[in-house]
Image (cartoon, rainbow, N blue to C red; front, side):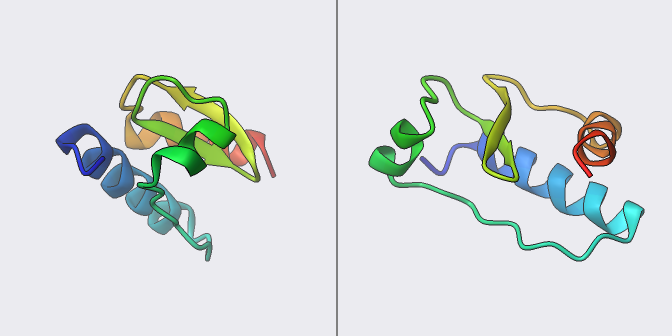
Length: 72
């Protein structure tokens, strides 16, 4: 599950955190069983604080920033 979309989402998430000056751990899950535990059927997916907030799309840095500040 090292697809280019997943890699781009990871980069966007890291950049969003950097721009917001948030110190957080970014974990890239590649094990299908772990992905399925979240109920995700389409990747890439973004999980914030154990909640799936997007799947099947690559949200922009700006979109991720909005999700991060919404979920403070």
